[in-house]
Length: 353
Image 1 (cartoon, rainbow, N blue to C red):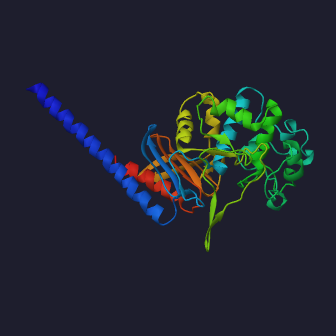
Image 2 (tube, helix red, strand yellow; image 1 turned 90 degrees about the vertical axis):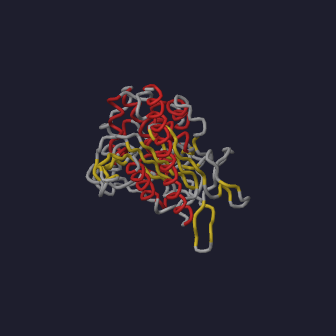
């Protein structure tokens, strides 16, 4: 009799747990559908708890000419979310003693103009405090065939706008492209090869690649911009060599592999991994580490440490590290609301427990 009561009790627990999980997924889906209908979500949404995917769906079109829908394995350009990978590659080289974070970049890029390079450190580049003018009208409109050195000398060797280290100014391209150039200079390999060998291969991120518009990348979703009359192709192809700022294409599943690896020491030791998530500089609201924003947010009435980064106003990854919750949103259309959508999802997960 006691045994049968225990079986009944455990069955009720499992049923209750299953209903709770279903309810959570339904709430997420209702929230997602609202944003799909108002045009804020046009890609793939993944939500995971402790590495376990609880929600994954695709929305919108990967190719509008052929009316081809996005799929859950569609590959998206992740734009500035690429910076977190570059920061990891830099810290791996720091761990190996090949880079000193407080050393001037002149040491690693001897061809860079010394009057600026002697004042800017690797740390400044990582934290967007380098002060080098980011003059977008000097950048080429599309592809750059020049090798990395010529690209850097021609387009990125600008004057200082402010004293390095004196303030934070987010550098969309220049700072992390220079970090990519440093990686190439130290390793003697292309940024693409270093990325593949040191991150993508070890984590088996087989659907992640370095963007090259000359290559055919299977399942890649086209990029679009919304206009007053409809949609148009989003042409934002900056320098392709050593583009550690925005040059990666990935999927939600591969990014979850990346997210989970960051809880371990598979890629880097604890000491050097902590540099990535240390608040090195305070911006107007969140702090910035190396390739990541770090924020303490009210999530469902509780203060939570949330690590995140956006990409091209089209994608974002949230990592609520205390409870190992992950939200990944990849769009192929710009969206103003991705940050708020992600926070709403984290609050929903918190309140549903």
